[in-house]
Image (tube, rainbow, N blue to C red):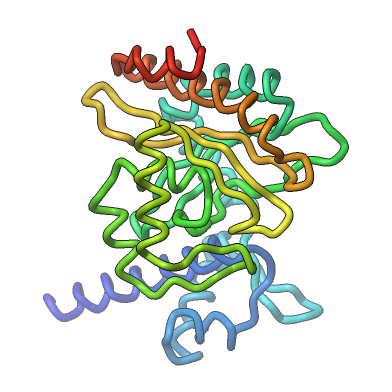
Length: 267
């Protein structure tokens, strides 16, 4: 009976692993691609897909024979977010930040993998704006919202910087020493700034969000088309970003650092 139980757990874990792959690679995927991603035989992956199709989480395109997630996974994800206090508490402050900066705004958290994930966003109404996807993992060391968290989470920073870092664009910083210098700069200034590192046409400004214990649990920031992101815009938006992060932190029970808010002229 123990062996059967272990097999059941292994099978269930393998099935959930397929869901994670779909989450990291939006759109349709072939059986071969899925098998390559999880490193298992096609026969094993096919059985897992059959289970997911049977319970309505995955469907197969009759034309391409590729697989994709159904809206059932989206409904469950939205239900989880609806019950997530941080997302609910942060929403009004994200909306005010978007109105002040007139740029798309994100609320981000670190995934256990060390990557950063957008859990909420408020899009700017501007015709040319940054387009992003909720739930998609992004390299934390290349994004403003990721660095705003890593700068205050040494354990996660060490984890991220210990693995091989690959450039995403010609502007990506992948030298661990340079990234640590950038993280030290975030600690000094209270705000992270990136330009074209994760997407050649996109930059960002972000600040950390702390809970009642003072631990950095998330970040919020603005995502800006690179052609608009000059020094003047950064200096104008940084106080708005810090003010929003401070307000959200207060909602979580954190007492703000008065010296930091005064330095950037926020209230």
